[in-house]
Amino acid sequence: MKIEEFEFPEDRYYLKNHAWLKESNDSIQVGITSLGESLSKGIVHIDLPEIGDTIEEGDTLIAYETIKAVSQITLPFDSIVVDVNELLWETPGKINEDPYNTWIVSVKGELSNYMSVDEACTYYRELIREERNRYTR
Image (cartoon, helix red, strand yellow):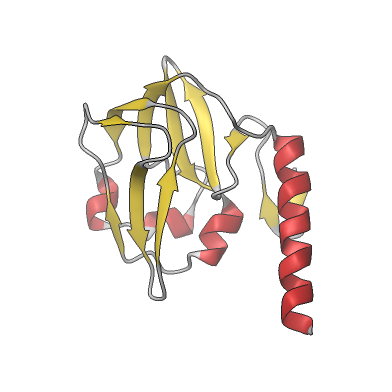
């Protein structure tokens, strides 16, 4: 699905913090949406967890730095890190180039508290509208 210029593939789940989740084999890949990437232009550094780390619901899984800010990705469920995209240590900007084909980490956990693509598009459409209204006043 598409909202303005932002894509939201139907084969993923979404979180309000601009993260996407995709079931892959017996794990869940985590990445950043195209809208999140747009808000995070120029990712210059990323902190990745270690394989085997246990991350509790709501704790920081990933932190990344842009020219303007530091952002975090948390998950709404407990997880165990089973893989990290090592390429991102050296080239974190790959996320900006192709956010849906650049997964950041893979975790094991019980998927919960996520949005379907339809729910995500409704949520993000309203978010974009509110932000535009805020800056046009």
